[in-house]
Image (cartoon, rainbow, N blue to C red):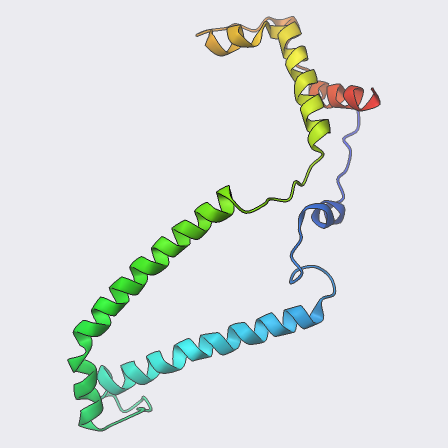
Length: 170
């Protein structure tokens, strides 16, 4: 029995992952993106805290209230329908934009090929020829309802891997 080849995780990551934030080095990118994330989360949290503490939690003395005057609360409750409708409209816009962007990325943005396409096509052709020789033609294999594999037709553990190695030697 052959010994399995060990795969170097770092080599695979270097070959397929292209994110500067998680790659070695790029300290300015990491610092900049972390700071921006913190700043923008603060920009989200402060107005939410001010609004909730000064309206819903006005009677709770454990919170620091951004405003205590009645006009602010009256104005907030006056606009409650506006805020609800605005939230619904923004939620719909965000969902539609996300779906549109996902479709655009999936269908229209150029994709980097992470593999050797001619080698993959050669492997597929070689594998198809192997399957045809071992199990019959493709149309038969795809349309048969039931097929019993004879013991001599079973694949060995590394047979496909060996087939690929054989293809690379050509």
